[in-house]
Amino acid sequence: MVTINNLSLSFEDKKIFENINLHIEKNKITVIIGPSGVGKTSLLLCLNQMIKHDAKPIIKGQILYTFKGIKTDLNSLKENELYELRKEIIYVSQHPDLLPLSIYENLAFFAKAHNIPNYEEKINEVLKKVYLYEEVKDNLYMDASKLSGGQQQRLILARAFLLNPKVLLLDEPTASLNEELALKIEKMLQNQKMTIVIISHFKSQVKNLADKIYRF
Image (cartoon, rainbow, N blue to C red; front, top):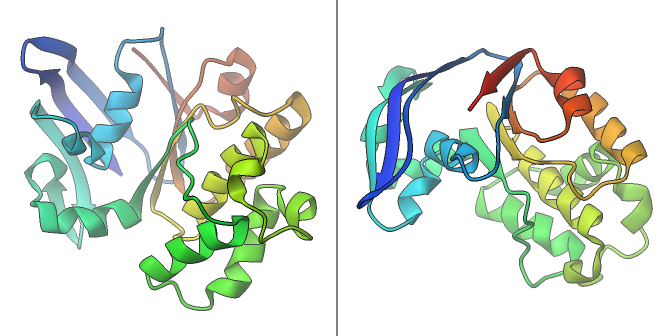
């Protein structure tokens, strides 16, 4: 699905990581582990090229992915191609980046921006998928910022599922959830026919989810 060859990342004189080699298999869950500060999140941001939002990254090596039917080095894509790429490879941060809108509008705005048909029905579906619907169904027009940390985390996960991405990049997706909800989300992720890459510090989660483990 995605092959990373000798990938290195730095900013001016600061090295983030170097010579990463990793094959991410289609419809499998790859879990990335390692200590804080070694560049795990930066690696995910390279996969959908959001790293280029930072100031002048120096990227060497290849990220090979079949984009628009052609095996492509994602590092070579032009700026006007990245919008389409990020509909296929979606990054979900551990820090919810919500819009200053209601719960419903956070999803509807995203759906309309990406021309998702019949999004009204899909909004309920994705909220149910992340076990949030029952908690918010009577308050869908409440300011999303009033949700708890765990609810916000599930809301941005629901938002990602609206696009049915080919590759889902998850950065500590259950960090703000209690054990019961974390297990439900893990089980849900296992049942997705989707290529998933997860950063996790939880040993039990790594054991439960990983088809493949990459150690930084």
